Amino acid sequence: MNTFGLGALSIIPPGQIDQPLVATNAESWRSEINSFHYNIQIGEMTPTLFDVYDILGLSVVGEHVTCRPINALHKFIEDNLGIVPTEGNLTAIKHSWLKANFWELPPDASPVQIVKYTQAYLLFLISVTNFADASVATVPTRYLQFFEDIEQAHRYAWDAAALAYLYRLLGKACTFKRRHFSGSATLMQVIWNSYFKLDEEISDDRHEAFETVMCVTTLILHDIVEPYMPDHVCRQFGSKQGIPRNPLSVGKSAVQASTTMLAEALTLRQKWYSEVYNRINNTFKMLSKFVSVDMEDIEARMELLQREVNE
Image (tube, rainbow, N blue to C red; front, side, top):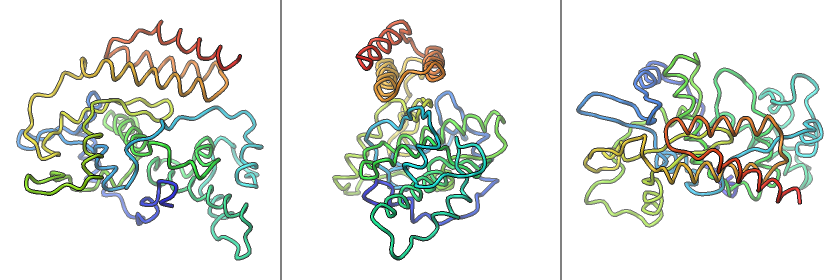
């Protein structure tokens, strides 16, 4: 599991969600800047990229976790898992079906079978940890594409994707658009203390991760784009809290770069479908409400990239 970049997730024990704690935090959530607002003594707090790195052991850097559309779902599932569910909509795979068919590896399993069982396990694993959804017991079939080549699964920025998903679902929970908590319950139930003490010697690997997670940027998971502003929670990093930057003016270049990268990632990795274009276009329009985004320039860039792909 460590080879695939998801090893730490496999040792997280199943447990009960502390409903009062999660509900209290959700009520304090402010989706504009993705942080909890507590009293004046505590200030703002939030799950950060460093939390995901330090607690869940996920990589801070890597490729964006974005999906391509899949036309022939039956063939796609058969090619990857060897068998196909006979019931239900193939856009999502039931947890119960994965458990029934891939619970135990046969003692005489071939190398091909080992790969398929591993793919099924990784698919199930991310659906009950990083991208957990308490309202359903299924996992989107499109997530299986991240494990088509399991040796390359480690290249994705699972850290940012998990946090983007959690931020988006907390935003829905705080407005009561969802009755169920979704996302990593582990990140929601830890006690956030200062990551470092002034006299603490910081290892090189943690220091590198720390420098990365202090960057103001945007988090991307498929069509989810969420602002990430660690300068609002300096106390979590053992620093004195200063006046954070205005979220409306924070990192215009970072947001524009992220949206452009999203356009490039989705354009270059898939054929162009109207529903995908509309979803991307809606994401960009949402961002343009908060920062200055040149929609015409981005759309022209996407069209140019698509022409290059077609040629």
